[in-house]
Length: 293
Image (tube, rainbow, N blue to C red; front, top):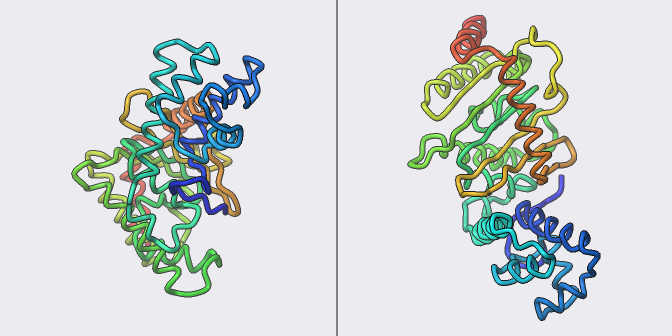
């Protein structure tokens, strides 16, 4: 997976920075302008404009206003949305969160930074218990079974990161979580029966929290748009902030940063919700499987 960390400077882009730069790039191209035109409007160099459009450097509000004016985009709502996106991006770059000092955060560093700032996370999972819901033993068994880490201390650092993420569930500003889990994830004996029994008990505890909605997608639900791939939809409280979709694969991480595509994932998630058991029936199924173990 790419090591895409949300650090300041010109070496790394961020999800929000790439989205902002991409929108400005499309606006420029729609006007048939070159980067040299943008550089002249900003009294900057062409390489700097290239970095801005790739999300490699934070963008100042005066620059956004100047470029919007240059590209003929004077709609107040559009400009305000871009300014809000830039503000959130700058805040994420300045963040001194604990994840930036975790040596094994890897490709998850940027996602964890977004999750830490999120007001809501919607998670669809097909084969695993979501990270925010895992017990230490379950997370440790995943690490040992994946083969990605050869040394026990590497696995332990990964487990520590996952446990620290879970503090948002019961913090003073708890994140709202809606997790929909395919039934197969409940039946996969990760770590063996004892580990899974405790993991299912943990799900029952979390389901009782006021900020957690937990549903199980049963085998009987059949085919639906989400069945092929897990994903997270991260939402923010700031007015105008766009959702970010995170799809984590075996060897790569995909970010869906386009507003229309993000909305489509939201529709897919809603469809999975409709086809899933109610929260009460989900709890009953989890408890039944726990007792069977």
